[in-house]
Amino acid sequence: MSNMEQDRWSRVKGRLRSSVGEDVYSSWFARMDLESVQDESVHLSVPTRFLKSWIQAHYAERVLTCWQAEMPEVHRVDVTVRTAMRCAPPAKEAAAPIDTRRTEGRDGRASSELRATAIAPVSASHEALGGSPLDPRLTFGSFVIGRSNTLAHAAARQVAEGRRGDSVMFNPLYIHAGVGLGKTHLLQAVTWAGNSGTERKVLYLTAEKFMYGFVAALKTQTALAFKEALRGIDVLVIDDLQFLQGKTTQAEFCHTLNALIDAGRQVVIAADRPPSDLESLDERVRSRLAGGLVVEMGSLGEELRLGILKSRVAAARAHHATFEVPAPVLDYLARTITHNGRDLEGAINRLLAHSKLNATPVTLEMAEREVRDLIRPQEPKRIKIEDIQRVVARQYNVSRSDLLSSRRTANVVRPRQVAMYLAKTLTLRSLPEIGRRFGGRDHTTVLHAVRKIEALVGKDTALQDEVESLKRQLQE
Ligand code: ADP
Ligand code: MG
Image (cartoon, rainbow, N blue to C red; front, side, top):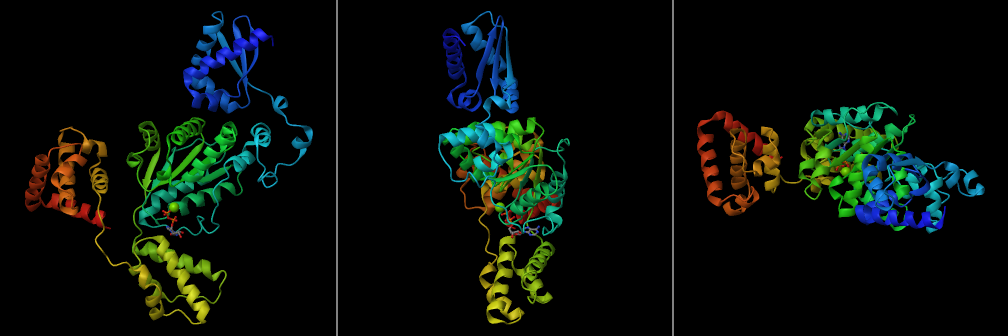
């Protein structure tokens, strides 16, 4: 390439950089090379197919414009994928088997360069991001199905059984539930099942790991390695999405989500709240998240709790054959430990430890003593206004933003009044505060709503039932 061409290419890149901004530029264009310029057409190359299709889909016009600013006669820009040969590392390295352990701990620019170009996406994924550790006990086999998780379980199974190239039924699959209700269990089950015996690659990441992986990748300038790594993934599983923070991370999450979904890859997400309540996330991301299948897992019913306890005992017996928990003890635990699956697991662990250490069988009396602190008194739960809005919105099939909006159609007005009534009766918030939390309404509006619902509940038994059911949902 002549010096003149080099200069021109630098100027085009400069224009592109200022047009799309530094972040986007370094994510998508840093590795774009000029191959040739011939008459009206420019030929560019990038190292991966994914980059090529991303650039073509999102920046084709922009790239052309930048060229035309330098060379008005240009009418077309072709982007191709550089052949592997061109980026191949020295023969010695290339011939070595790719073993993620081998390069662990190696650092610095040279090796990250290498990884970025030469290593197959899947191993790069382990290098650049490293899936979060998986717990071998969290499989479908040990997942107990009950009323509150039937749908989530069925959807997760469906995802796990998909094969490479199958069309994706719902994307993303978004599962939300409170603490200890089985989100991580289900997500890891998907990962285990998906990775065993199929040719698919399922990567499980906590949101923290996603952030850490990305930030780390940026620091070693392997943002592209990261993207390439993702390219090799058939199913991306992200746990605890509510912890995703930071503007860059979110932008990157958004890119990743879009890229994967558009490429027909499956995305599975768990969080402690529905997409609409992920307040720190960009509106577009939220709507993309809500665009697949959103499933909530409810609290564990007594039967389900009993099932979980039994499954835990069975698992423990694999290593401690003499460990036995009599049925009345299991019933007692299922009845009294109501909060979440973690406490159930904790209870069994304690009984096991106690019976091992003292070489005594498990009795009801011992169980009562051992798990006393896991049985939380039914203290009234602190109810938040957001919870009220969420539960009411769900019950009446409106959105939370409808409740906060100024819309005055009947299907929103009543739920809004019910929600304000519940906010007044179930929390200690003042009328003005409630008004503020409902889209900046005046306290007299809140008062009116409270009185209105109070009066109606006395006469209208259907409404009374609805309100009771809402209260129960909020207090459970
Ligand atoms: P979350 O991620 O929703 O906070 P986890 O998946 O970590 O909850 O579950 C907490 C504990 O409860 C784990 O030990 C898990 O195995 C157990 N658990 C929850 N739901 C179930 C279920 N349906 N079947 C079996 N174990 C469950
Ligand atoms: Mg979890």
